[in-house]
Length: 97
Image (cartoon, rainbow, N blue to C red; front, side, top):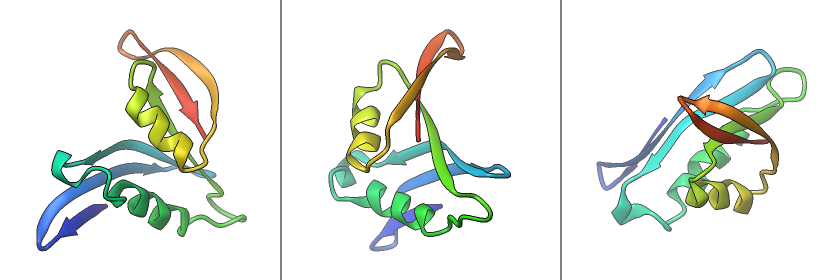
């Protein structure tokens, strides 16, 4: 998914559709558009695709040192449900649901 502002790419989200979940693989917003709710709007659009009988939750793995991303997901109501060791080539990750 790509977010545009005045015809310019402002951000994107890459996700994987699993059988019961939607996994956010990567989410990025250009620095000049950060804190403008673009990332939150893209996540809301993804939430709108969920359904009880199909994909019913969004998950994302966030590097242990990436506090900004952790706070982003926490502020959207996600919860860290566990630590996955060496998830990213020797980096630990928190699983957010």
